[in-house]
Image (cartoon, rainbow, N blue to C red; front, side, top):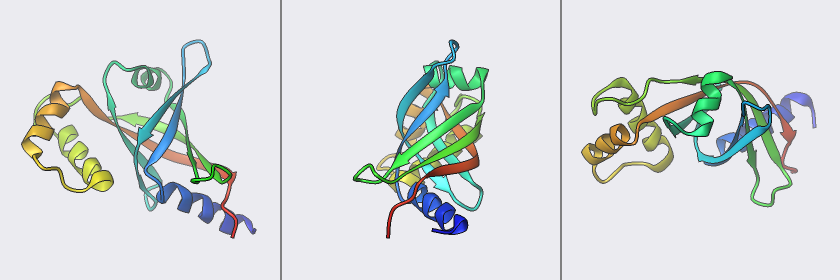
Length: 146
């Protein structure tokens, strides 16, 4: 498979899924892995994830913004890894702030419409949510065959 076709197939794999594994770097240098739901904007090369303030992955990314993001096919034989630079929004503080607005957009991109947006907005503030933006720098892996 030519390189540009392989890269497209890997990007297609990321774009076609909604569950991936986020790898961050712990203080001792070992990886910390988390299964996460995500949205991918192919045009911007941007993966977005809703995360909670105070969790290990959030603390790790504040200290070291390097991250890897793994997505695999249903059978596990095809996979894509996106190496990325992390950016964290401010923590949600008010139901109408920019972070909560972005969390609403992220939810819509992944799940569709919420039955009660006011309740959702309150929960994002109460949970100390923020958006992790992964700016993809490189993608590698094993593209699906065929």
